[in-house]
Length: 297
Length: 168
Image (tube, rainbow over all chains, first blue to last red; front, side, top):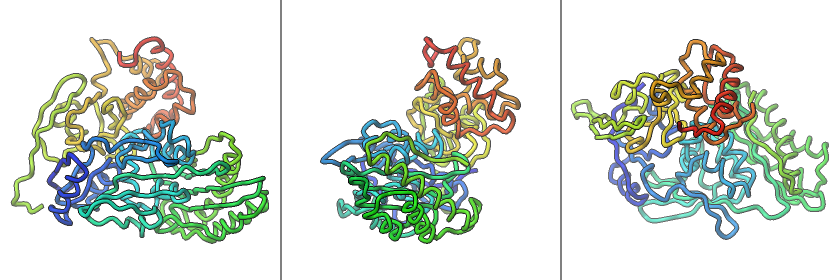
């Protein structure tokens, strides 16, 4: 399958890429890792006249720690995050990166591309929303920084202007006593998850002080399960409390029936994933090392 | 793009199995088409053509990629290894030999892709356990074997390559 013909432009800096897109107009698109865009072009769901390739720009792929935060260059591949010792400081990052699609796609796909595409079934936006995440963007009027919650505005829609790109992603390292987990459930490796859940808990003397729960693939964007979060705060995290939270998450989910399962099935999946993610997050909040990642049917 | 405008043609140079291939191509040319049509290297197969099955897996700068989901222009200047590059001086690569010895293939269509995914795995981890093997080839679909003999082949290849360099 071939995409429609297009003109290819290779940018040598992010600034040049922005200028190119600005001059080429709205029929132009950025090409990052291409693991979502190339399939869309081949199916001719997307038909840009021009593609501006970002992959030859130097210093756009890096993982660095600075001021209690981990910063990612937008072109950092999922596999680089999966294998990064630094990214392990926030276990959710490893949970997410190590399970996205398969080895081949993780070798090409980028964290910046995933966020900029804002696929409702994408992994990164849902994994990062429970953390303090900032998206640094570059446009023709310079740089601006947005909290992730203001960055993704709708399905496949972000706050980015047409000629603006993601430059860096910055994730604050959660404080001591805080633990998180990200679990996605998939039918097989290369497909998008049927549902995914991110949880971040701050626990003190076995009482939950702070809770964040986000549900992915079950709405147009990642959904914060506010009632489920509230039901955990101030409580000692026993089985009954976790049960109550997972039922509240079921009510917050807004899934559609599709090839990945019926809406009811996905709500049930949310309940199970919230329980598992809370249990892993609790143990990590206590300082335990727990493996967690994507689950396969 | 209006049809009366001539398509853009770009010069691309890719090193494949140690040999340099310079070609003039349309930017929409996929890496797998570049290999098969422009370089006559037909060992890399097109399976699903939708980024799922992994039959088109090749190594790009030592990393496994699905060549149906990379434009050839993006591989400009890159080092590519295809199944044709595994054999050296008429001698099968230990991965190829292990797939044969363990009956890790039947129809063989997915095998070139599986062997290159295996190549990345064993370069990083010569003694993978079954869980690690499953994860490493989760992007490769085989409709014949049921995978059991594929796992055996990968373990065997790892054992046979211990001490030897994976690149050999």
